[in-house]
Image 1 (cartoon, one colour):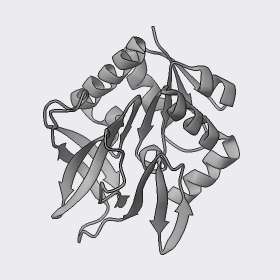
Image 2: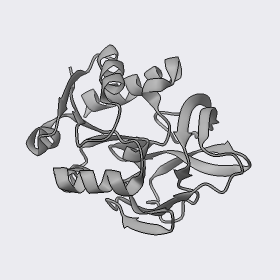
Image 3: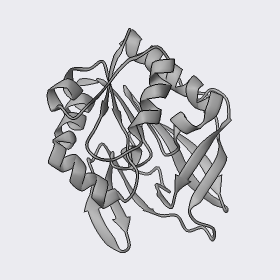
Image 4: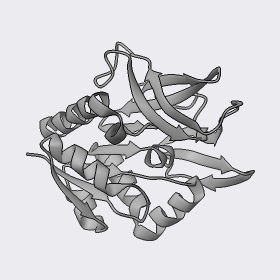
Length: 206
C-alpha cells in the first residue's frame, strides 16, 4: 500500500482529497511536516484561491524546496487546482506577478473568456501518449486563471487540454513522476476516482 502525504500548508479542501485517495487504497496522511512530505511515496499538493496567497503559504511551510527536491529525484507528486498552477514559473493576477515553484516555464494568467469563473464539467481531450488520459472524459473545473500556452514545457511532458468559451486551457500535465490537474479529480465523480486510482497505482509501481 502506497503512503501518500497530502501537504497541509494552509490551502485546499483536504478532507475530500483524503477520502477520495483512501477509497483508491492509499494510506493517506495529512501533514505539514517537510520530512514526512519528502519521505512519502506520493505527495499531493492541493490549493484553492489566489496564486500569490498560495505561494506565500507554500514558501512559509517550506513546500517549495520539498516539491523541487521530489521533482529532481523523480518522486511522485500530484498537484490539484492551484497546486497545479504553482508548479509553473509565474502567476499574474490583477496585474501583479508572483514567482511560482518553477518546474514548468509557462505562466498562469487570467483566462480571456467572456464567462468567468470557468466552473462546471468540461471535457479533457485524450492524448495517445498519456498514461492517465487515454480517453477523453469530463472533469469538474472551478477557476478564472490558468495556463494558455504549452511553450516552455519539457519536450517529454504530456499536455492535456480543455476548452472554455473558445479558449484552450491547459487541463493537466504529465511529466515523469509528476501529474498536475487544473480540475478537481476529487470532485469529478467516477472519472476523477479512476484518475486518482491510476495515480495511486503508479505510485505503488515506483
